[in-house]
Length: 142
Ligand SMILES: Cc1cc2nc3c(=O)[nH]c(=O)nc-3n(C[C@H](O)[C@H](O)[C@H](O)COP(=O)(O)O)c2cc1C
Image (cartoon, rainbow, N blue to C red):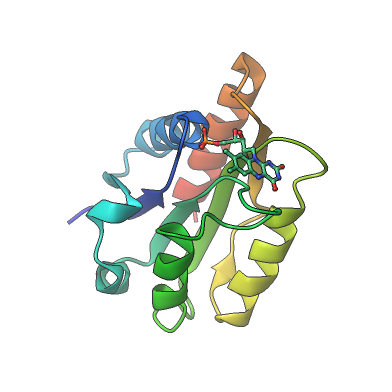
């Protein structure tokens, strides 16, 4: 059994790149990571983890992707109270408002939101990659 579950959706690979770098940060601190796309995970699986990272880009009108990720998130809302949950994702324009909305939704579940959700504009730069690694390293230390 892994120490941390990372579940993400990524249409063009940007959020996936973030997930890879966050995973690297977790592994730098010797955690075992299960990383999977949202279609590969049964929502009930989150019950097995105390540390969960969720990744989804801004889609629609500053919303979570609504065919796979949003339904998954809805399904896990009753299962994550008291757990450490971190959020991340890529966005295209504006200020990344979807993340603020998502953070607020997460807080309503009773989960412990880790830091602020990590957001990257479009494709992660080298600097963004480093921020993702640091995010993973800090999450590992919880
Ligand atoms: C259908 C669609 C809708 C989008 N809507 C938004 C949006 O409302 N706000 C925003 O900041 N970016 C929006 N974007 C831009 C994506 O968030 C951005 O391209 C992101 O890097 C995609 O991440 P991914 O490569 O992990 O799929 C949209 C992109 C697509 C394809």
